[in-house]
Length: 272
Ligand code: KIV
Image (cartoon, rainbow, N blue to C red; front, side):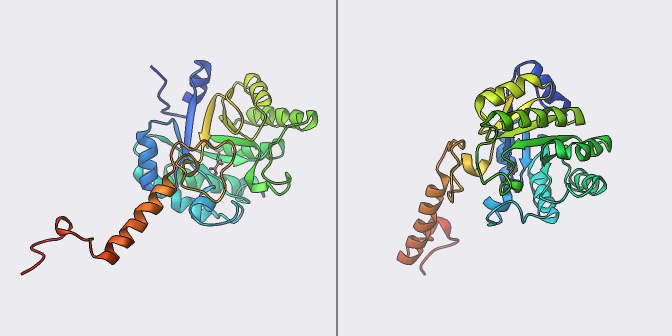
């Protein structure tokens, strides 16, 4: 029997029992329901929705209003799986009171159980203030897409000794600040193993190898629905963009030929 994650505290229980944690993204009610049916532990309303749903080139332009709109939609499709709201760029970095207000909106308006914020030791005081306000927080280090420009682009982080030591330090700082879990994005597998072993809170990897306490993927990547670029770490379990494109083109052809709608899609006789 695997542990059912009913509250964020169950994440630590899963780590203790060496049961892997699963998290996937959703940004609307339909995908929220599908992800819940798959039985994952956590559903992340990630700011990646800015790229896969809103057509932005990065996650930087995503606003709190957009995140709350999508988190509420996911909430309507999800019955019991814990939702995590992703704090968008500049909704939490400026000062703790603003971070608490914005994090609180995910809980009060969208029924989220926790929020996620990107950043290392530099955001630990803000993360601690949000936790003190009673809001569970998942940290996110390694490749942090909101500040990818500063990191030299969408690159693996922690490859040399100095940046590996910084990541290990960041992980400790966030855990000490009260984070309930930590996303490790694009980190070498052995560094992720070391960080996972050193922390009592669980790590959830994306492009961080198999030794993390759990794994997260962007659902659109997993389903092959987002084809603008496919990161190396994103295993495509399906190629739905191709199937969707073929279905849409078949509709157009059939309407043009007059074979759709047929009798079974119509009401009453087709001819007098
Ligand atoms: O926004 C997102 O979907 C994320 C995941 C990549 C962890 O932050």
